Length: 440
Ligand SMILES: [Zn+2]
Image (cartoon, rainbow, N blue to C red; front, side, top):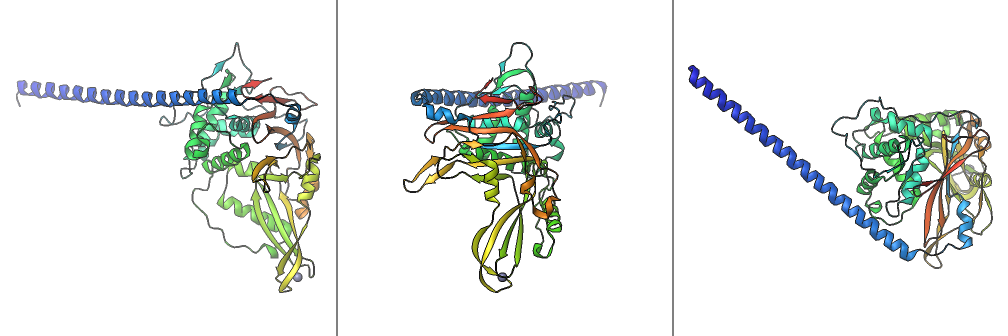
């Protein structure tokens, strides 16, 4: 090629390059526009839903009778956190220097925040109702006030993200963003729009704006969070183990190790306990043992409207029950004692007070209105008799958060009472009251 030809070729190449760049830019702009339009549309739908809901709520709202108002102080589901009451618990810090999220996941969340005048103390931000989302908000507020899980899901969870989880880490990420908004100290209240949307995507039942059960949401949230940070990425089939031949302490130890081989996550070590259920033959003393892990301590409230004491309820739950069972040693059906034992308690103990029940005579769901008594300080030591309680590090708890439903089946509202690290007073528990976005 001579000089002239070379120049022409170069110019042509440059022109082509420029055209290509223009095309790419236009494509990117097009995609951005489409995304924005989609987001606007979602926003519009959500707003519409909200307005419709408010309308409906206004129509339905009736004055609260004194009988209903009285039960507002009754906890439905409590969660106890272990530790001495006087031990200072650090408030979680949102670590701004933490490893940034990969660019593909970093996107701005729309929290539609209510700004506060001046600086808001971290951890005192409310969640706005997105149309009957009090069931979700109250659970999120309870979870946010547990400092250790909050700290973990704000700053450390990403290194444990499980690429094979159902939500591919999405729920954990959205949860993390909500925590960051709540602990960032910038807003009076925020709307957890993206969290709500993600939850609805994985469980369509939670997608709309109808009232849902807070306990069901809590259980599902914990399942997702565990799955998202499960360090065991593939399904593990555990070998059969004959726990009958092992001592209580060896059996508990092995059962816990088995669990860790299949499910190992921050959620398991923080929230799950190990239970042992036994069947004992009354004639020959033969005993069969099975281990299981559970999160919630489910307590059935009595059918009458009597006062209910949590401590007594746990005692009853752990007392033996007579069943007919085929004894392996006697080789015939025998009267056996079926009993549940707490073998290992977690740092955070979740208690579920079952208030909703189906009235079979009328075929409707009802709510028990028993007044529930509980201690702010709670020593569970007496309930852990398995292996002499040796496998236990956590026995002393204090009440940290209560997710509470007040009202009836026909109309009710969820609120959360949370112990606040921020407003901590030394000798008595101060509970913060989260009602919609208000924090008193
Ligand atoms: Zn027997």
